[in-house]
Image 1 (spheres, helix red, strand yellow):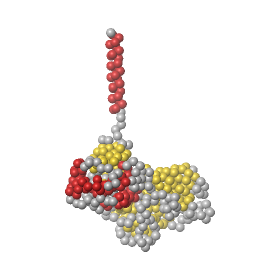
Image 2: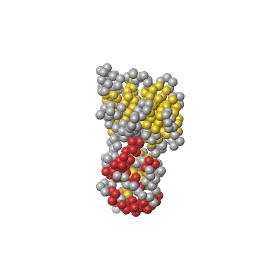
Image 3: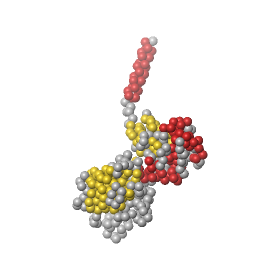
Image 4: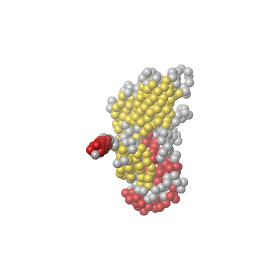
Amino acid sequence: MHKLSLSLVTIAALALAGCHGDDVLLAEAPAPTIASGMFKDSSVSGLTFESGGQSGITGPDGSFSYEVGNSITFSVGGISLGSGIGAPIMTPIDLITNASSDSPRVKNIVRFLTMLDSTPPLSSGIQISSAVQTVADSWNPVDFASVDLSADLASIISDVASADARTPILLNTEDAKSHLTSTLLCLYSGAFVGTFTGSDQGRIGLHVNSGSYITSITNPPPSGPISNNTNDVEGIIYSAIDNRYAVLSGNKVDDLRFIPIGHNYIRRFISGAPDTTDVDNDANLIELESTFTGNFTSPNSASGEWIKRIPTTASGTFSGTRIGGAADALYRFTAEYISASDPSHTNDAGLFTFDIDSNNNVTGIAHSIVNNTQESLSGIANPGVNGLQLTTASGTTITGTIDLSAGTIFGGLWNDGVNNGTFSASGCQLN
């Protein structure tokens, strides 16, 4: 009898110890990391979001909070748009598995969101009014794979018309894709700097253009600015071993193998450096000196692999992160600059990136890839010939003719007192 009692006491004590141990383990579980992001189909305000313990309504700039590493769901009343792993920037593409801007469900989500905008035109962002948010609580789920979204949304469109006292417009699928594309073009555009390593090594500066015509000529072409509607990846690569730079192109005119950033979940691109200086002395200026293949892991970072073919073979990896480019800027412009009369490609070359506010004030960064230096720049962006007037902290002057609506700069010139040259640029309205 005493033995049995002792055994029961022992078992009870072990059970209590086990429970106490579980409590210790639970107490040591780290609190989730909270971060902020922005939902973009242009900026979308009035969406409901939920990520773990974080929930709320997206702000005027599409802002939300999320638990890092956790999923986040966006909805409008009873209609869920979808879920994805939380990130600093989320778009309709991120809410559908293995999606792209061509995916029918993505285009239908865009059609739905743009129809909800209470303040057309869409260039000012998508704002879902509080009245629509209230009535949306009674809405039933929508199948965004529908082939007849107009019929499926008939009662919802009627509700929106009554709540906002307006006539809602449901875009067709191609216009919806075009709208999303314009958002993505601006979202990924900008300047990225980093390094490449391997059997050669050095620094890399990527200029992701916004889909606008890029040129350093004095005047636009006779037909006006041309939009290629692709995020071509241009830039400057500087070899610390060869002590020279090469100009990186992503334009298919230079090579059909080049691929702009894909507007899909992979976000892959291929760019390269045409052998314009004939480094291997074979009189062939259309061959590629090197090729860079990468992915944008987010709108703010890229990484991948590179291969150098001439004058000797080499390979390795590269990575870069965004510089400048405030997420709340009205306009964003980025340029790559090179020195004039520099056949050896050893003088200064790099990137300018700058934001423009509603008063045409400019703030930004000048980053030399060759010299590995960075400094601030500021000035004004007025319409008219040479209305762009900028100065860096060290006194470099930057001028050009800027067209904000077209996202172009013509006749770009820079001068630091020692070197001078041209620059090509592209830009867009970000918010």
